[in-house]
Length: 358
Image (cartoon, rainbow, N blue to C red; front, side, top):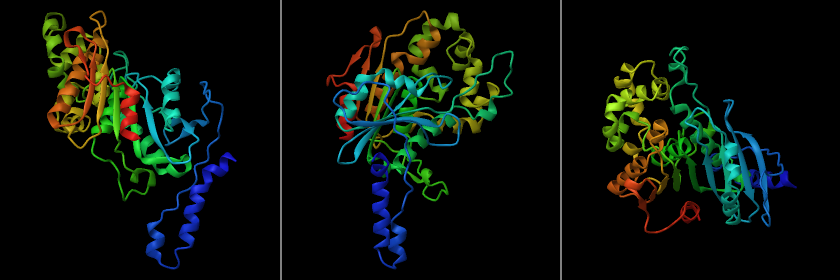
């Protein structure tokens, strides 16, 4: 019976196309999409009183990590969708981390909202001994971000099989997943209507973004301005406040290069990399027409400088200030004592996302 549920809507489309007569323009207007075959299995969390299917390791692309898990509430009407993107600095992490937040998943399912968690391609940062020869071929952080976009497009393409409302999708995540969510929420639509790959014809726009412990932008050179209030006080220790110098001070030069897809610091300042950085600069991409943003950064400490620079509340502040500047709705919380911010709405992540997709 589960397979019948998945096939019923595509079958209806086939019948509709068959009944349209000999008018080829009518036939072309209706795209009959192949049914997505899913093998349902027991979910990794308890779902008391919730009627939902669960499928894991659904493939959305050809790369090794192009997989997602999805919870599908059994609802009469097509359901909105929330996609979770895991953290890990784009070098680690796994979609399975979402299942540790069972209460969050249950809250979405109880509201007749489907919940998916995705894996994506990861960067391999070479050690100093290994050198930089492997860096450029990886393409920087962009392939990871594009995987997240493709996962969204794949689920949109198969909306009928998944009983999804393709117009009402939100994304959220932590750390790298937060940044990837921000990128999806601020980037212009990446739909390619003439692509031979029909998945890539789908929209990448979303209705809301949740960013927890986020970075403000993936144009890492912009971090010099974002983090200046703390790096200027550490300049004597770091040797400077520019990002290549800061990265060297915390042993992250190869990470910086791998992230931006270049094999030398000089390569960061080329016109080609300037264009690359602009394409991953969420602050620069943001405008009033983008998805509303929920951002929450937690307290960090000077005992771990790399974590401090990656997750400091100044990143959340930069996102909030940019959203205010362009006239984009945002809800922001910052737990750093010197920059503490509590949104007057008191709204939490789940209610924020639900408000925008229900």
